[in-house]
Length: 380
Image (cartoon, rainbow, N blue to C red):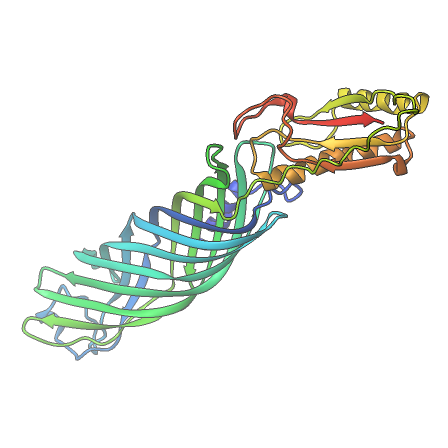
């Protein structure tokens, strides 16, 4: 049931797998904090010395001295996570996380209809996790991502329970367990700082092993209890934080080729003719108007003395320089492919991308300027 709940929450934030990935390229770091909702977890005491039931009617002791079983119920607590990762530029990321989850005890429910007893303390869970994540782009200001991973968690438990018969017992210790997690989140790039994104994330964490903790009991003057077995433990965390892509250097400006001085006797060359093809934000697909302009350029190249055609792609400044460079190349290739479809020999076409350089309309970083999202077709 807990796993189905986690999968349902992840599915609500997931997107179709065919969506275009937003590449995070190179190393990055992140830090998050938020609320942790721990599921209740079962416990069971081992055998303790037999005690006459009439003497201790509220202890829940059964014949033969077998101690009670039940569950700990938790209330909302806090959680945190720090991570270092690496993005491969195609949407995939690998991430090493260090997490901390707090489950604060709210009450103790004994079996056998004995009700709830006052309980204090809680469980601190921490350890490393290795996660694989996938970022996606839907043409929106935010980028969804999903992921999953495995690792090892230590669970530090400390709790005290008491009842109206002066009975009390304390459970404490640190034990480890293998664990897995499921992740779904959203990232919002902050335009004022290239490489910095605001994140909102859901995580489901499951510890797979049961664990034994030491206990001590007080039964009207003295008797000690045995080990307490804690069942599998799971929790749901809702986190917000920041992710920063390291080494987010701007793309270098394209080199300008030297122009040879014309021979004095040669006639002046015909001026180059330029056609502008514009694109929607974060898109490399051609609009109907773009297709018309490309067709006109292809037709004119056949009637003029055209020897080469330069196809230069550009973006606005709303993305990171690394991402914009790749987007400008995709736009240039899309226009070049359409020129070939319209009858222009591929050998005459040179397609290049220049990212967010050579802006048609000068702007600052993080600005969605439509006229800068373009491809220039130059007939030479």
